[in-house]
Image 1 (tube, rainbow, N blue to C red):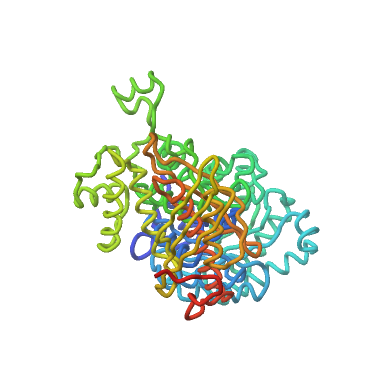
Image 2 (spheres, rainbow, N blue to C red):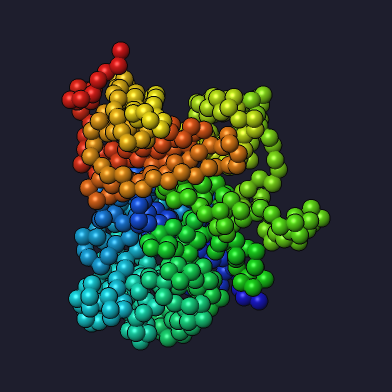
Length: 549
């Protein structure tokens, strides 16, 4: 039997030993979460620093070992977000990404220097196609860049990770040389990146095995993998890499990320747990928090989880076939390989309605993984009572929508106070909107449009006065039935950046207004964080804005 080596830190929850002895010989796989960096690069996603901090807090509760908080040199907002996360979270490693340039290394350290466990992640193209067309550098120049920049990062922190980007399309002999150079310069983790999702499990596994035997100094570094899902094999490739010697997996919640996304954290973790007989490794993740984390990331990123998504999809534990239902009634394990409670989905069914009290409401939220402060709980309970007057029974998804609305309200610059529309086959479509401004002032206006939503958005744009373009509008029913809560997702574009908004209500027009306000507020907060916008002291004096009586 292999010697067991503890790779946890003083509190037993994070990997303070990233040496191969710690990573290779223990029964743990390090979970490196890059939701806040690679996940945020998903087209159509833009998170404010406070939203990134909220996700980081949830990842901390989930128990991931490393949080890649962002790419500090990419923008002032990202720098601020990484700095916030590094200064608050004490348990996990906080990682900042940097390309092979001195300014990027320095900026990454500046952002993460307040972390209890800081890590700088340096990356450099490794394939000839990227070296030639992106960097316009020779292999020798790439080796020198890797050596110098890893050494520069090592001057700031002992924990340095190096990623040869597009490693699966690199010439193997050069890849091995590049890894040896980075390790000699001080890298403690080397990450084999399938950047374009090109590899297959057998092929990727062979590459990892070759790294373990052909890189002469590999015993001084932990081997990590970062797989994209362009061919739908990111999770399979990551798991095969573990079987062949890798001890860190880089992944994202819900699998979000560039193009088709990354290896999904929830799938990787539950595969290792459910098929321990095959892999023989565990993680430090509290799997009962997976579902809650999935919902938080979905809500803040604006990317809905498809119903058939493994582990966290709405249909993941639903059975419709008569044969399946018969088996489930007799014995759940006939058709379920995981207990839904193991990922944080309550198996019990507590039906709430208009007669339910605050205690039952609080208990159900706790079962769903939500813990609200007393003031926020009071707001959500009042919203629940209003909804219960319109619906006979309140589903879990209804409750999730209520809580999400409450959380979204905490980052409002403008708050939707009232909306009234007029529409029909042969009538003019009009909308009247009342907002509460950043200084507490009441602002109102009205407009005509081609439809009720168009009219409403015209009014809001007139009041707020920030140019933007609506690029996506979609409606989804959270539950079945005529009284279902409708959820609207929109994306707006401003200065080439996309901002997502979500809103939920039994009235789809109201949900549309909430979604638009959510997107606009995120736009404003993002521009404020980057220093591009500052609200005037008396915003109500803007031309065209009328203060309501």
